[in-house]
Amino acid sequence: MAGNSALRLQARQEHPPLVMHVIYRLSVGGLENGLVNLINHMPAERYRHAIVCVTDDTAFRNRITRQEVPVLALRKAAGRGVSVYGRFWQTMRSLQPHIVHTRNLPALEYIVPAALAGVPGRIHGEHGRDVYDLDGTSFKYNMLRRAVGPLVHHYTAVSADLATWLVRTVGARRDRVTQILNGVDARAFHPRSGPRVAVGPENFAPPGSFVLGTVGRMQVVKDQVTLARAFIHLLDMVPDGRDRLRLVMVGDGPLRDESLRTLCAGNAQQLAWLPGDQSNVAEIMRGLDLFVLPSLREGISNTILEAMASGLPVVATRVGGSTELVEEGETGMLVAPADPVALAGAIRVYVLDSNRLARHGCAGRKRVESRFSLEAMVNGYARVYDATLKDPRLRTTTGKPYGGRSSVSLSGASQ
Image 1 (spheres, rainbow, N blue to C red):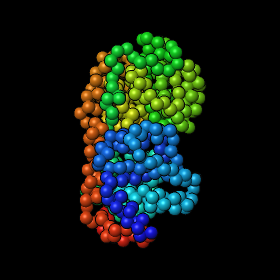
Image 2 (image 1 turned 90 degrees about the vertical axis):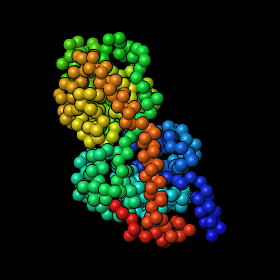
Image 3 (image 1 turned 45 degrees about the horizontal axis):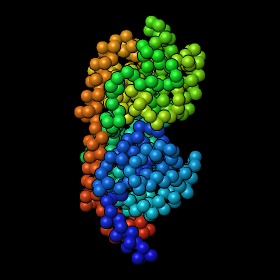
Image 4 (image 1 turned 60 degrees about the horizontal axis):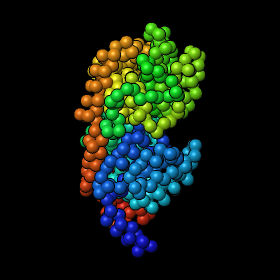
């Protein structure tokens, strides 16, 4: 046994440090897309990566192009099944990570076993809040965040809104919080160079039509039903609306059926395309004229960045990090959440003003190129990982990590 531990330790020291990313589920979503981009674009000589899913993973894992990135699912069942912690402990023993990086509330509690195991670096990232805690004010969840806080060496946040909340509400030390803006692949997502790319079924969007669309998980927090309602309002607000206007809603989830029912009730189902999840999002973006994000809450939306990189103006709700991405009157417009009439009114502005449409789309592309590169995002995370592992207060005092009782001093860890 001692010989095996020595071999594991030697391998651990000879290879680039391993970051074990802990997420709830690997499926279509902004957090997951950002994680895959980080793994695919970080130089192999800097860090190795593994993904541990609290529940399960999907075909989204196929977007990982880097070799030898294990994706492991703990298969946690509904409720508080304690057996998942045993599986997580065994996963840590097998992978021997240098850093455990949890993301969002459903993964936060796994910082605790990581601390007990003596993992040298423990980082928690906030990418946005869900419908059960839209404003981050839940007493129950904030008690959990504060209880786990002393075991977290560093926090990352994708937006200034989330970074400020971590300090003011959760109680994290300001010098232990780093905002890292999401990056977008501006080569894959680029403006169309000729006629609009065809989207939807045959003859769905004939020449002269105006196609607005959205991409994302069809969950309550994304509120696509409000967009469906806004589209019905818009049909009556625009001359020849039923001849000109088309709606694309890419993504899957419980709101897909509800959005379809809403469109049917407004006799607009034949003017909309809801294909579920799609792998060719960059191509679909080039088939749109305007991107719309009706979310109730956002961190830093990858789909907004992808739309801007594709040369599209953006109409979004005035929530969370969306206000940091969309420059109102320059790259798009912002409206109040859950207000289909206001959303329809903002969309109508672009339908009737092609000059503004082109001008704001061009400005959005330039903004992405100047501020939201993948290189800047990757370098940001690498710097946090480097600084965490170099902090002498966070190092274990034993050459045998994961050996049962941890010798790491938790009193030295900071929020």
